Length: 151
Picture 1 (cartoon, rainbow, N blue to C red):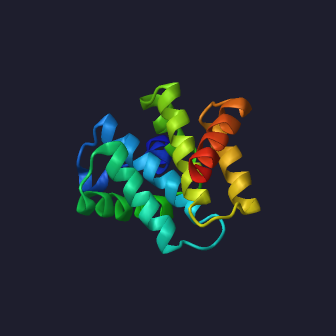
Picture 2 (cartoon, rainbow, N blue to C red):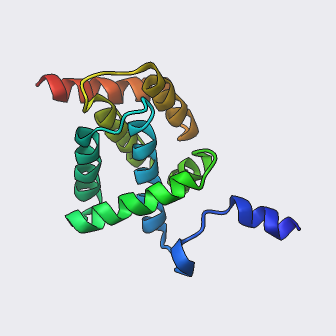
């Protein structure tokens, strides 16, 4: 019975394949990007393009690989009741700098449609806390992204 409970909360690789730490981090980052893109109940083509571009740039993926990762992440996201296990994967596999970069990428997805919705703002604050980042780190990341958009 206890084993079934552990299985319920485990992040499971697709079809029994063993995932590497890098694959788990890629998947977790993608899930968070999808989560924030859907926070305002609209997943625009601009947000999708931003996520694909982020995955290609950060992880060196080809277009098809990024799209496949998005499909896998969407399945995992749909099968999960919260984002803790994904932020935990990032906490286990990433440095503070990489986690800050993830928050910057999240801000870029949020601002890709030109607006900051209240749900998005709440979610990015929650994700920063789950990633063990400070409020100043969150705001510095936000200001960096806003500066990029203005410049």
